[in-house]
Structure formats: structure tokens, C-alpha cells
Length: 326
Image 1 (tube, one colour):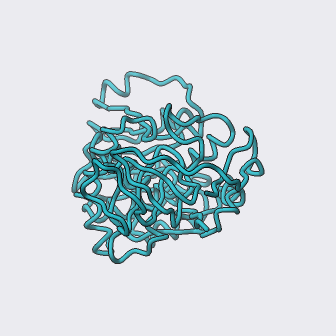
Image 2 (image 1 turned 45 degrees about the horizontal axis):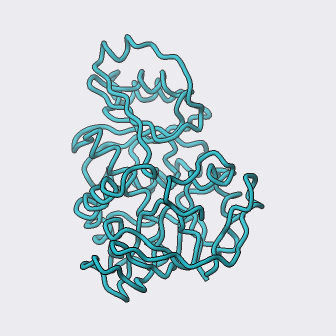
């Protein structure tokens, strides 16, 4: 089969389309003929040699995909050949075929194209597992999303609004703020021209928000804590602003704040299956009802993966970048 191979650690140009061996199907897996895969920041870090795949996972990048089932392992009962599916994977999405543990597979909702379905598994599982399963964001609360125009941000806005939550976002351009507003964000803050802490305090009568989803890390940590309400929860999913900083622990104590962090890729197969099951139960009905729509910035052929990475690293995109398999 054809797949995108990282020929050495480096810039987007190291991504090359090559012939590689077909994946081998295990008893508890399904084999998918890939229709599309979607880009994630983790892919760019892997390309640079800074985020190797977990032990036992494919060296081929790509953490989600959609496609049609071509074969099923002997222990698999739910899926059958010909099913249209999408999946959360530990690697291997930038390829024509992939094997996936059956518990990490989701049906493609009938109202969604097979290609666009690739835009959902990673964001849905990330947002549901962090903000809802671990930080317990609930109806009537307030929620700040940093990077509201990202793939995760555009999804999180729609899901939170569907669940009756007031949404605040930060983004770096008027075009991105407008896109977030269109998706339902209540308060849109340009972090380049406004202090988000002051604006949040102003909008919440000095209280702060209940939950923050943050992909910046160190450079935002103290300001995030200042933006939280009593019993507020900060969830960190990325370190674009660094991973080492000092904080005033007094602010945690005085307002009973919680700081958590987690990734998705390194979780166990069993844990991923639990998250996928929760997503199917709680999120998939909203997608099937058209309440959460795919936000796709660009669709590129698989061989143009390097261009997809350049777009992602320019941060000009709004929503997801999809690669279409041959």
C-alpha cells in the first residue's frame, strides 16, 4: 500500500509518499480501506522527532481516519465488511489501509460524508474525555476555549453550545473571531489586542469561568488561574507556550482550583475504548442531528501531506485539514 513516511526528523519536506507493507490484522481489530485522515498538531511534532508513537503503534503519522471496513478479526462481532466507519488510532492514518482495535471505531453518521467523518474522532474524544469526563463541565456553566478556531476549538464550541453552556474563546484575528461567533461562541476575545483575563472578569461580573481548555501551557498558566471562578477547573492539552513555569499556589488554595493535563495518544487500548463508547453515546447523536457540523478548512490529496503541515504550522486555518487517500 501507499503511505506517507517520515524519512527523517525535520520540516514538512521530509514527508514522502512511499510503498510500504500492508498492516497485519489481529483478532480484535478491523482493517479499514482509508478514505481520509485529518491532521493534528501531534503529527507535526512527530515529524520533527519530538513526539514518537507509543510502543507497538505504527510509525506512519495520523491519529484518526475514516473509510470502509475491508476485513474483520475473528474476535470482532460488531463490525462487518462494507461498514462505513471512522476511528481513533495511535498512528497509521496517513495510509491507504489501517488496522484498528474494534473498540476505537465509530459508525459514520448517515448525514455525514465519508471523507468529512475523518475530522471528528480525535477532537470528539479529546474534548469529551478532558472537559466532560474529567472536568465535569455541565449545563449552565461557563467555558473558555483557547484557540477557538482550531480543529478542537471549532468542535468544542459546537458541543458546549449544544449542551447549554456559555462559551468564551480566544483567537488571533478578526476572521477567526467571526468564524467562532458563527459557530455559536458567546464571547470572542482577540488575544493579540485584548487581555483575556480582564475581559473574562468584565463579562462574568468579576467571577471568572468554570472550565478552561488550554493548549498553550506555561505562558498562560497564571493568567488562566486568574480567569477561573471558585471551584474552577483548568485542563491543559498542549504546550505551545512552553511546559515550565512558576505559579502562585495561593490562587489554587483560595479558590479551590483544579489543574489537570492529559493526552489521548498514550492511553491504553482499554481506556480509549471507554472514551470512544462515551463519545458514541453522548456526542454522536448531536452530530447525527446536524447540531455539530464538520468544519473543514482544506482537503488535500494524501501526497500533499507536506502542504497540509505547512498550513497547520502557519496557523492560518480555521477548523480541520483533511488528507484524502488515493
